[in-house]
Image (cartoon, rainbow, N blue to C red; front, side, top):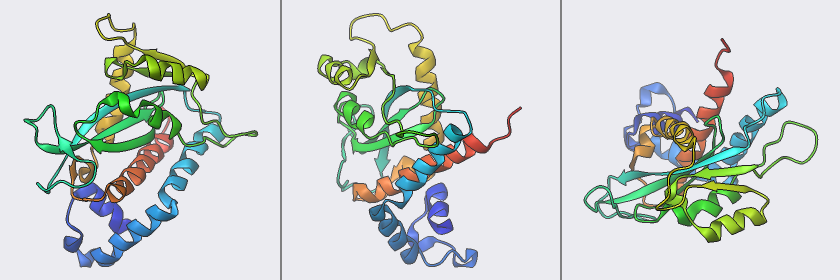
Length: 233
């Protein structure tokens, strides 16, 4: 596990993993990453960490923010879920879509091609929110409201969110931004900054999306662990 985290934080090739650190060979760490991702180990770890503050009386704020940001692959050949970036001279790249709670706790990350519109991932992000346990009763998987900027403007998605008993608070194209949206956007941007502090996520090496996402899951878990365990002043 330490070898996987070292690669996640330092963005080095597996074969360059320093043997003197005694993490095992890069090939062994790579196989473990793939095996644990397929077994759902990282997703389960994320759920456990989300349950900790809920059990301690600090439940997540049930208002979620949506945002998309880019990650460019090192391989010019690209791979699964890559496409021309609309913001970087059409270089081949991928995009991370993120949903977090009102405190900036990352709940779900999805990787798509860079030219995929943000609005296409709204429902996938909401439906991908893991169940937050830690208290008696059924774990909660639905927020009270979902907030998003104009990139998520879609009447069809608003209708689907209402069917799920979720209040859509999404700015409309051509209309003034909803009051307070800037503060929410700042929360999501801060979470993105924390996510992309892990260098392996900012430049994509993996041609297979599942392996790239295998790094996103422990990154979210580390953000949760650091946030929930920092000293309270």
